[in-house]
Length: 536
Length: 87
Figure 1 (cartoon, rainbow over the protein chains, first blue to last red):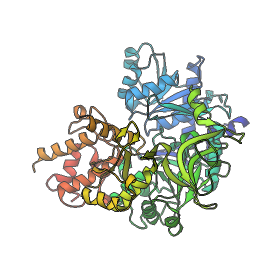
Figure 2 (figure 1 turned 90 degrees about the vertical axis):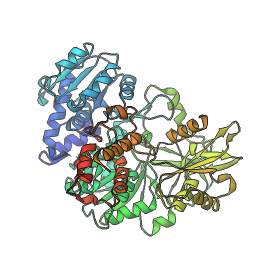
Figure 3 (figure 1 turned 90 degrees about the horizontal axis):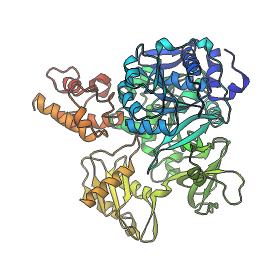
Figure 4 (figure 1 turned 45 degrees about the horizontal axis):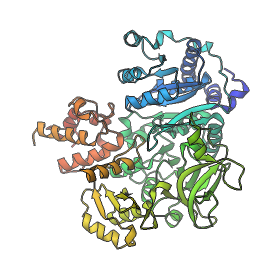
């Protein structure tokens, strides 16, 4: 079971060390069932050994995972890593053509799939031209699939070889630990190549900061296709803690789940906390087991943070920020009921400070640092700087670049931030793209959204530049989903607080905000709706 | 409102909300709405508010089992059927 030294600094190395140290402790809990470290290691090593035996062709060292909140999905991730491959998460809840596009683009030769999603998987297989090896470790007979797709090769439970025949794959700290496709706003999904050393740097920082031990129980609210899931898995497994993965249905009731599984480290998008607030699940003192309440992925409203903190009074609440290209998260801010409302901007919790090993600059369009107290684009570098985009040098060069007077490559986040004064935390303003020009004025859509939120007394508001004419944006349209709002009165109230060029020409009510696959408000979808209305 | 009316309203809400383009074609009263990906867990909070508006009263979330939201049929049984245990 001893892993070679090089493995200790790969992503699977931490898991293997914990499996040796805590073989009988739970590593993964799903529904009413759980796997100990020894059991999970056994399953993962059997998958790794089976793929090592059957997949001998040359090509990228990548293995796809087609699973959703199942033992197969997680043991597949570890199996890919143990054979020395990076994993490429696919997602049974995504449309099949998107899964097929990701698999094809990654040039996958091998996919580990779960039996319960095989019906959907058939549609994906139809669209993958190249010959694949498909391993379904929890199916006994998949001859029907084999007959339907003679160009692919199928392996099932009876084909699994013994875990003892696994031999550690060649894992290089610079190699890809996972290839994660982010939804580009236009065109093809971009694959972000995240190296082992990126992830181990992140994991070390987080596991130390949160003092993670084998007694911790992590929530796993994110699908594997959302890179925040890597926090839950790899920080927990580094220290022998348990990953508790709710099923899609259990995710409906986080309150019951937290209680039943005695979660100690909670991590979700702020939208989940908003949902819990709406469903009256944030009663003070309700979650005494939580030690850390962590949020990432979108703006965290101060009042939602405050309500969650009161519901989990023993916990420290932190707001994390980071794009996939900088490995999961790279800045953080500790919430404080007194200090945060003073430091917040537009009622949104600050994103705080870069992780200790990371360096951040706030720059103008020429990538030169802005003066103190001015807003600009956040660019960052450090050990979590990823390898760039899979087979896309052009996009990589555009986003990963050396600024003037610097020698290191920085990643351009496309996010606008502000530090009001030295010593103050970084504040998130919005996407660079969300800064628009109206009548020559620079307008931050986030600022308009904050005013609409406050005046409507609601948790989510969106503002978009629309319509867009030949001279740029000609107007602003606001959206809220609150049912009983008097839209005209709201528009008047908002007008009273904003200069003319920032005033929405219209505020619309929509029953629900469209959300993207990661649970964030889908702004392009709202814009398409406006364009369609205007065209009809 | 009769059973058919209520189930029709529930199905209509699911189809309107779902991001799956073929939601209308695959949804029956038995379709598992979460496991089939028709609705996400974040949608369900809104769905609860809608059901409350149909009922004219609040639902005590802590008394519910997640299985209540399995399908249109289970929601009808949980919230609307005569003698339903949760209300």
